[in-house]
Image 1 (cartoon, one colour):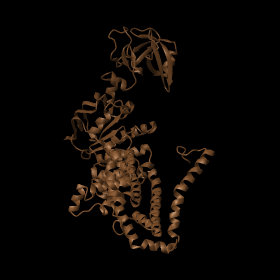
Image 2: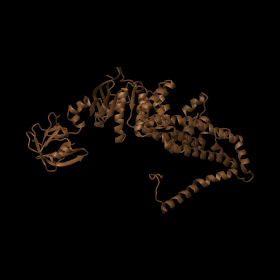
Image 3: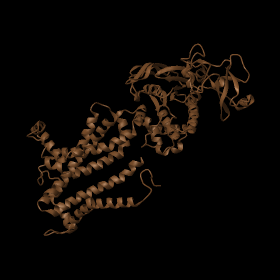
Image 4: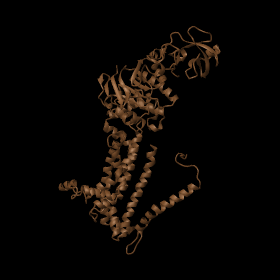
Length: 282
Length: 340
């Protein structure tokens, strides 16, 4: 049975025009350009060979392998940090009333609206060993942030911070506190309530948030560009690899890595669509 | 006494939810906290459970001071109006929750869960998720879950409030029978006087943060302490500046000594009973007609219809409560009548 709350029953000429317009728009803006990347990744151009073999060879290049490794490492840490803090911040925002709650809520959204380049600049100012007092202090104990992996993690975590929070907050609001109170009256302490009741209730929202965070972390460019030295084998992430090789007229390598990034996004989206209906069924 | 509440006060900003409330809940009985919405009864229940902290006063459960204890250390079972089911767990896991938290041996948990599911007639639904149960079944599951930990008191917050009328009535009877079987001290909150009168051994009437009266259903119905209790438990009508039960009024078609004369303004038949609305002589049509209920047979024998002149007087021994704010000399000025 069709859900008439969301879906219009009647189909008229307006529906048709709207449909065509949307499809054309999406094709010109998204589908067609992205498909060109796929195409280019396998096509021969000038002196470069085409085909799957050449494609795999380009991906097997040590610089590319290093870039993927770095991207994965950075994404892993960023996702872990944002999952832990995301759940914490969500609980704080939904379950507690305190002075400055609204400010905190806006701060969490800030990374969505601030340009990643600005995020990069801000992190450099705060953590570089020359301008920031904290960076200097950390440097003196042998911990370099900017132009090193921790800086990349920071930048990536910054830009993907809201994704988990914005998924989890509405679910927390919806489930309310009654089940948690019931668990308490049955003898569960705070830790047990969290692990046995709260976490399972927000599980799907959390998975969705983590998938989005992962996709965003793998694809981050602007903030990473500023905080990384960005040279081969020295802080060159996958997106930077694409950028650098494209600039240096090594387009086939750029397209090969770009295509993997697209593929990962598509897989992430597939996971999300797989997860979504379950979440709605619950 | 199983629960001893002494001088408990609670306010939310300017709103005083509980104003110096003291009450003793007897062991092994079924007690109803009855009152209108926003009267403070749920707040009192939540304070007893430890889900809410009182601003002042003391709560004692089974002889131990529980005022400062967190809910998980009070050993109370709590049942919520909207079930508060653990949606991601099967029915049996829901019921087992308290036992698993207490790290009871697996075999014992299994046996106990089975017993409880049998008690609430949900054996065949053990593997289902709460979302696959009806409202009444969910509430029975919640009851089994609360009973699993063998609480010293069982607290139910409007347990049948979210259910439809028929299921509510069934569950009400069932709760009464369950209580006769289990004998755990039970306190339930309700705003439904019929529910309280039918199920409870004892009723505590709470209004505007204060206790109006405590007593058995009979006491409260027959000997209400004031016009609020009288008006809240059962129907009332105003006759001669007093609140009287509509079935406690004698109707005569001939003039009688001390009777209030009037004419029948409306006759309404509801099932087996007939309600007649009598407008006293000289009164305006302002919705303050005296309501009298009687059986259909009696109404017929008197030949009552709209326009009949009747004389009304309270039955012998009927409870009459003066209307607050009524003039001492009858007939001087308009009366603040209580609408039915």
